[in-house]
Length: 211
Ligand code: CDP
Image 1 (cartoon, rainbow, N blue to C red):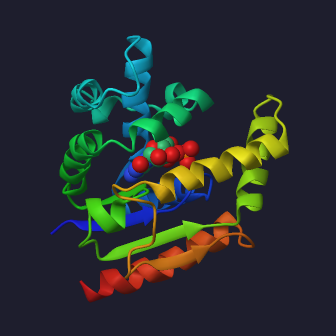
Image 2: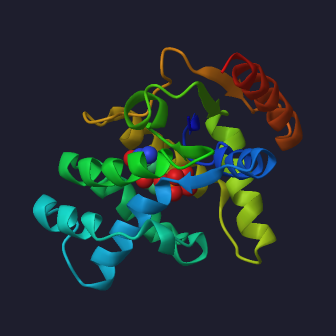
């Protein structure tokens, strides 16, 4: 049987780094589901198609190839913004969730991270983590990342963006961001990546022993 680890949380909470590290440690396949929304948004933008036509966006979502997802070409800010706009459309979500579910069944195990993995995509996952941190800490991390990459950015602008994104992700009617009832909460506001990983590992090892 495939072992599924579901990781959810808001923008810049550190779930991507954590998910990659967990997948590497256990030899599991990893899918960053945010990239599926980003790839759909990018394809629409590139083709000059509207971001507010659900039927068009659904068609594009169905053509997304999970094997070709690459964060480096999808990470631009405007693609993230467009992604969170098309992510409110139920038909787009249905198309991408189908693809994500078939990915989740790969042997011997999978790690999926996103906003609705524990609640909608893989509600039966034996391990669910909800990774969060205060908006200020998340904005600070984003800001540091941009500076480290040689770019320049204003902390207050990033903080406003983080809050706007939270509102959109938590406030949408279809699959809003929220912890599953049986998720383990990991608040990384005052936790290093290493400490968060160790906490996650303890939870995962206990569940693997039960299975
Ligand atoms: O990296 P960042 O936190 O900016 O976002 P992402 O994980 O790349 O996802 C981009 C957008 O896709 C998010 O703002 C969500 O609105 C949406 N998304 C979603 O609705 N459901 C998921 N499972 C993953 C992402």
